[in-house]
Amino acid sequence: MPNQPPGKAVSIGTREADVTLGVKLVDALSDWLSTDDVRQKAASTQRGYDRVVRLMGQLVEEKKLPVYAADFMPEHIDVVIAALRPGVSMRPRARNVPRPRSEASLNTDRTILRKITAYFQRAEITRDDRGRYIKFAKAGGRNRNYSDLCLDSPEQAGELLEAAGRRHPRDRVVVALGLFCGLRESEMLNLRLRDVDLRRKTMDFYREKQDAYHFVDLNDAAVDELRSYLEWYEAYYAPLHEKMYVAPARAVHVAKVSNAEAINPRWPIIPDRRASGFRRDIKILLAQIGKPVAEGQGIHVLRRTFANSMIDAGLDIRDVQEALGHKSQATTERYLNRSFERERLRRQYQRPDFRLWGEPATRSSGNVVDIREIRGRRTQTG
Picture 1 (cartoon, rainbow, N blue to C red):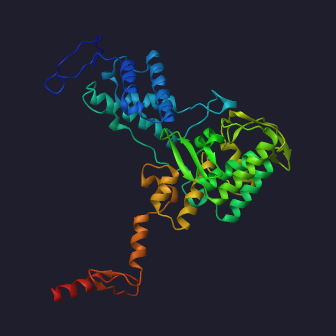
Picture 2 (cartoon, rainbow, N blue to C red):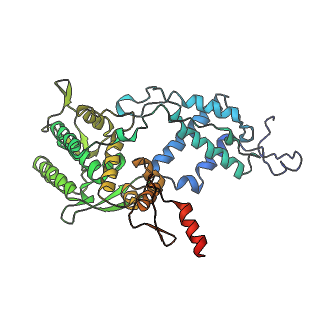
Picture 3 (cartoon, helix red, strand yellow):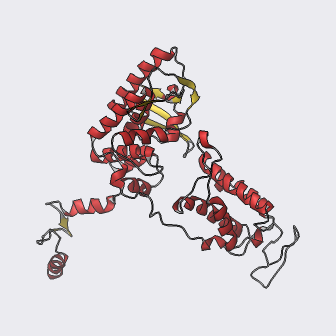
């Protein structure tokens, strides 16, 4: 369909009578970013939206995408995905360095494009949702063995804490916050001294994904680790004030000791400066204790270990969901790689005093309730 001048509407039959073809693609994308559905998202999610929109604007300037949004077709989605595929490293020391991206990692960008095309249809810019042709890649290349994505035992968690303590006290408290509190990396980065109250054994930290503060009670293990760390913190950086970061940026001095990276605890940290991230540090520590993990799974090993330890302690999955900050219970179940509804029914059926329809449960050799026999008795008595 040829491009139309701005503001001009055309009618083709009855189905396209209300379709406006004069909206430019860059203007339509800008309008989408200003909608409440986008503005209510977390800051990190909005940055992902902005990145895709900026790229699409560049492709329009390069004449790889049409000028008008009504001419945005499924084949143009493939052009955007191809432009996103090389990727750019967001690490502070390697910015603007191309890095390969797997097909599964592009699913986030495909979801953004799906939202954009759905908005075009709602705004009557296009007559149909052209994003329905988007095919999502299966994440078969990633490590999906969830037993490998959490620590195997409390002893291994202790080894990880000891390895982190030998490297630097800050690294040990980061591991402790993940193992005993289940914090995300962004939550660790934003945590300040004013957010921790060891006297009341509470912590009130900011959750970027929910754009709100979250109040939690600290367990004894977390309190002991934080108290020990803050004693060291105060010994080197007194007087402390509430705006200092709990796990701040560290002045990097690296020494090679037995082919392992070691950092002297006396080397300084910068209490008033926010750290750039802990993923690399956690992956190094996990490798030292013989627990190599897949790409992007360092911090989540600690969170999954925290979640599984809560379940093993007998807590309900809803408590785990609240502690991890998940909106959906399905997300929490994926962390644990188990269906709690199936497990609940299985435990209920295996109870020796289990009764079905008021009748005593009869069990076959396979330890299964004989439904036909119970139904037969109900028919005779009815």
